[in-house]
Image (tube, rainbow, N blue to C red):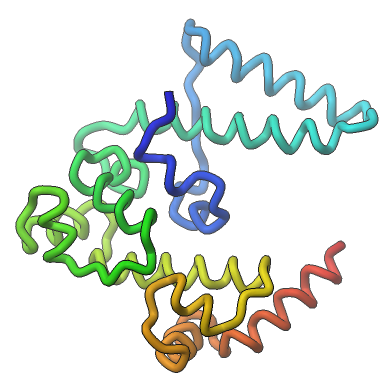
Length: 201
């Protein structure tokens, strides 16, 4: 069964910036742990053989392993822990994150998010900051701009279109926000990102 707390963020490259640097999965005597161990060994063997289709197979298997490791890590998060995985697991903050990730273009406010998850504005803000060390609106702005960077790099959508997709009412406002975030305007960043990607191929 798909976990709705992860549905909106898995597969998005910027989720990596919110995860711990190391995720450790403790070996258990259960089918999931056995699958992780077997699959990891198979990946190592496949990587050494260089067989046709190996790169494609390894890529897909790595994605599956990544999801399974995240699921294991979420199960291990204790009640008093903080961080992104703890926030995703939290019943109210996890729902707020799901709402924001699911509709970046929506004009979210802390009050509106609080109503959706059943918390007052101040209670949501306090709980959010406790778990993630930033306010809901700071998190949302950062996620929007990370998403914009991915769209700039990977698509040919125009700047105004991208601005609208992530919740900015004007291209000018998006340009200013993106420049504060990335150090250069969106069009300039896009050109540089694609040049760097071309050189790395």
